[in-house]
Length: 123
Image (cartoon, rainbow, N blue to C red; front, side):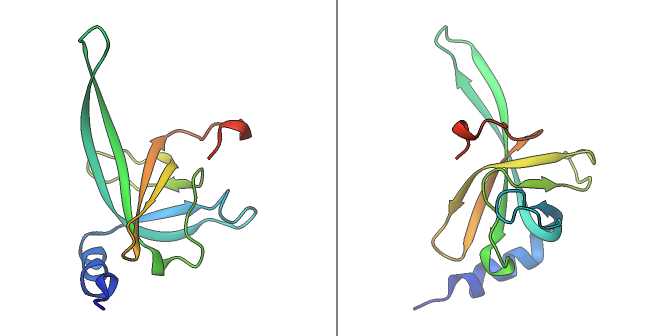
């Protein structure tokens, strides 16, 4: 069996990852923030509305190597981002979704601001 995480993911993270701070409000309630790293991706999306107008949006995601986390981040954990390219320094993002890749990595899909407080709508 090929260890994809060691052969490809590890060197990719080592080369392209940027620093972040994780506030584990859901994955480890009551624990302090900790430093981590991940590979950023920003993608522009065009969505056609019912009346054929185009709506432009941008998605932010962060690729991580799961073995670098004692407890993997969960939805609604907060990510603090230092200034980097198109990301302003005051960025606080929250994890909206976690997509495991089955190869030792995960993609965290992020939103700006703070997560909704309503527990009924939280994943």
